Image (cartoon, rainbow, N blue to C red; front, side):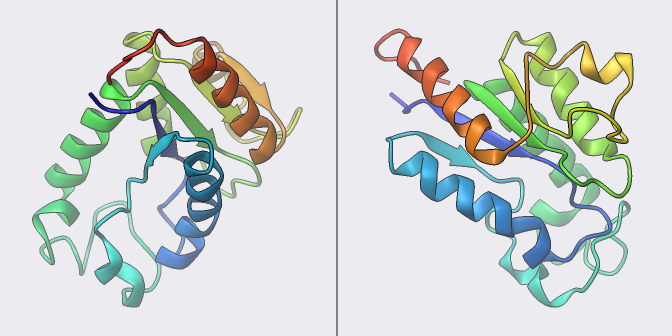
Length: 162
């Protein structure tokens, strides 16, 4: 049986590997400290560290691994977003709309998986009813999101598997 698992969604396009993984590493450690497993869409993708800015079409790196092809990214992210127990989507300070994150929010919402979004109180680029109406909990810090996930995990039935 898998432990309670959280998918860590958020912008990747337009960022470097390191800037896309820094908050995820923090979240992973904090969740792991309380026995909650987390999944990053960039796990097993360390080879992207030297690519530079990550693009929406994987140009220049899509064939480096089966996991970095457009199809590989789509399939694994969809699987993660629809089989986890909760999602934290960090949209705080987004400089462009994260189309991938919007898909992940929708997939999770459709599967009735709780979506915890980290966003500014107002003015975030993702403030659109088709996005915000699919968000179950909107908070303004990663620590608040982790606390919401802890509370959800505490209420999950024993032996909950993703």
